[in-house]
Length: 516
Image (cartoon, rainbow, N blue to C red):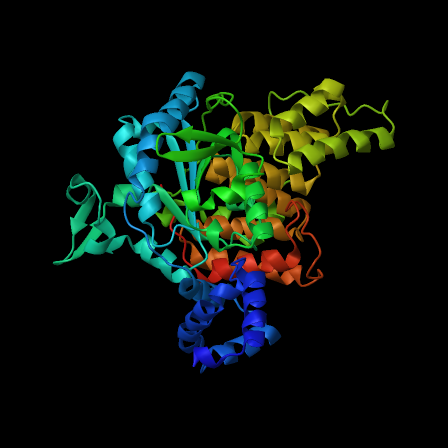
């Protein structure tokens, strides 16, 4: 039984759990830890907690197994509109300011992330709130990303089917307006609300973010409640810093009151409201992002009306051989960038290094100021133009990001990485056909570009094209075998080969729900 485990073994178990999940179990909670692992043992295929520990000490569990552990180690207590005060503040103060600034800028775009979303009540509550606040919702590009470490909880969230217990303390109109009753005690969320939320797996302490590749960038609001309380201090600090980088200037982090100690020395500014404290990336009210210029395109937004509507030629790997070499006039209305040779290579690297440091701290506006105050855009190197594109994308300024990327491509038409960067920006604009074409161009330039294969697999997966997704994931995994586990993957902003392999394996095993 759990009570028979020695303190020595419990100490080892606590350390190993912290390494895998970031969850902190001090000595006072070792017996709780033992009981939780004891209940997880049978599901993991072991007789008892001690056997689980021996396995953890000698093996690397899969993400599914880590999720099983996490589901037993945490209290998955959630229901619709939980902590009503937070939703009231969001509805009365935070969202109106954000929505007004976006309307004024002409950019009707909003991005919200429910980190550790459990069985989905929180992100669906956010979707319902926005549905009620936006009579012109159809004119907005709303992204609600919902992630969790527990794959079973994610599957329940994607199913969107709930019992009465999920509606305790919820307003009476909720079930009547936004759910269909299924049986005597089950309620299925309306499809139009379900399609507003994208669910996917993410381990906050282990996985890579913020990043364009998993859409954890340029967030306006991040909900992460009753999660940081489980983490060791260093890992909680690391997660908070990543959230800071993932937010746009003026963006908000919403946690539970019990987690305030973790944010005392963070980069965030604490903003007190009646009954709650939220955390803002920048002082003052949310700032409007630079307006995107309207564009016209024949691209199909995510998802297409039917998978069959996607042209097979877009997906055929063999069609790569039919692509023509890039042409000088491939991009239009973008002036060619002449890379100046007046600066020495050392001076250029110093300038780029300083800007890169700012980028890694999430100070994206300062990246632009640092590079352009020291020189004109015409003086920027291709490397600097790419950094400007990434910084603008992480601020949510997609039109500007695309412009910087196009300028970099004009300067170096044979750089496959720039085609990949362009594709990630196009995906965020929901120009999926154009993104696919850009990725195919990247593979024409470099057929061994693992990240481009991965990205095409990710698009196919979101569109329900499982065969194409499996093919591209297989190609990426084959190319990654040539890397050492700790080697950074080109263009992945620090993600290692081992990290990308794990991500592909998880994506191959887990279905994704993508809002339309």
